[in-house]
Length: 296
Image 1 (tube, rainbow, N blue to C red):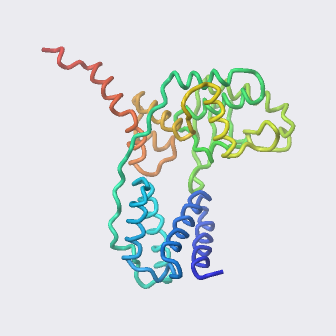
Image 2: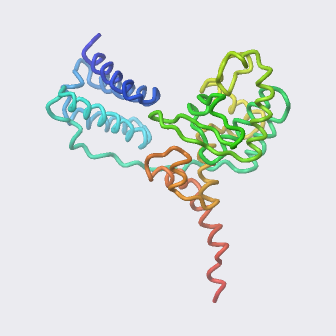
Image 3: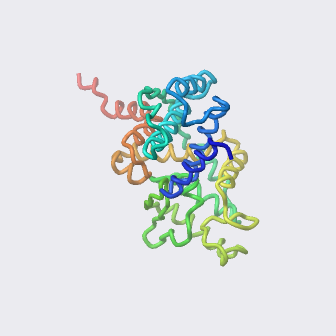
């Protein structure tokens, strides 16, 4: 194992001890491996400020989105802060590198008619119809689970008396998502068909795959893609449904503070970023309600 792989392995071990999410650890590794490939034969802990700046500039010039470049910056900043704390480096080469700006592109809000078509594609009484309907409805609730949170839900986490579900989010944060009557009805119907599944008594996972075993994140993506094809609508991924849920919350007058608690956000920027997708639309509707020029 070369020096860089040893550094990366140590850094991954540090994050596993902190119970950092596997997705975040994978992102750190990807950035560090890319940096090593950018400066082949160089030890990551010997790189200087100019090396890191050139790496970020090259990432930008390669056509990466500003958010992707910003993520690489954050990953490097975290790594070299760790190196400094562990006294692997005497001086943090990221210390004086300016943080790149992010050009935010609002995610288009999924129209109501497309959600209706998606749910219609799931109409039926078989196992997958009941499961897919329940998942899609839960994704549209305030607090919409991330994919990893959705597939990680256990039977014990579902409270059908209080109409709420507990999910484990990033950094092992736990939060509770309440759901409405129709989502509760969809979950109730799914639980009845789930009880007849061959793995019902063996697995504690809420969502099961039709052919056996627990539904994976990849399986959840594939389910949505398949249902969109059946509904003859543009592709919708779980992240778009999460944006839709955040928009519906803001449109109903929900506060940013409550949104942070429901959606599992730690930064006040997140509800504003998610709400930006339909901010103009909401502003136009509000202006029409006020019709302030009519007073003259």
